[in-house]
Length: 291
Image (cartoon, rainbow, N blue to C red; front, side):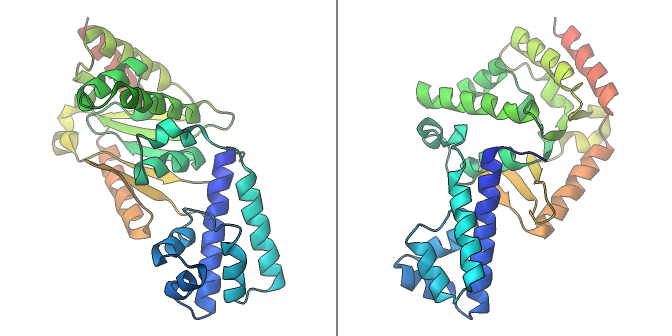
C-alpha cells in the first residue's frame, strides 16, 4: 500500500528506535550507559528507542560504537536514518499547529496519517473525520472561548485538514460509531446541524467509510463511555495504537493488552449499533425533524 511520506518517516523512526534498543540489550547495557556517552538524559535515550525522534548525526555513531554494532548493522542503520530524514514535512509540522497541540495530541496526527484503518467511537460527538467546518467552529467557539482567535483557527484548520486521509490516493478505512445523542445535539444551531447531518449521510456512502449509530433503544450502550480510537497500520510489524481522549489531551497507548481491551469495547458497542443503511436512514429522518 502506498502511504504518505510522513508515514514512511514514522515507520523509519520506529525501526531505528527498536533496532537501537535491541543492540543495547544485546550489549548488556542500560539506558543510563547510553545517556552518559551521549551527554544527555535517560529520557532522551528512551525517546529515541520509542521511535519518537531520530538520533542526531553526532549521537548515532556514538551509540553504534558503544553497542559494538557490526559493519552491516551500522550501514543499515545509517541508511534508514538518512532515508527517514529525507521525507518531506507534513502539514501538522507547521509552527501554528505546534503552538496549539503538544505531546500525544500532536503525535496523534502523524499516527493517523500513517494508518490504513481507524476504528473510532466518537461518543456524543460526530466523528471528527466527518465533521463540517461550521460544526468544528461551533465546538471551538464553546470549548475554547477563553483561547485566542489564532488558537481556535489553528484547531479548526487541523480538524478539517485531518480529513484528507479519507480522500487521498490510498484512503484510510474508517469504521466509526457514535451515540444517537450526537445526532440530536443542535451544535451551532439548526442550520449548521442540518448541514452536518446531510454531510454525514453523504460521507457514510463512501466505500472506505462505515458509520453506525448506537440508538437510544440500546439502553446502557447508548450512553457508553468516553471517545477512543484504535489505529492500525500497514505491515504486520507495526503495533496498533489506542488513542483515548482526556481533559488535557489525547493519551496514546500501544500495549497489546490495552489494544485488545479497546477492541472488545468497540465490538460490544458495535453489537448494539444500527447497520450502515439503517444509520443513514435515521440521520435523514433526524435532519428532516430539525427543519
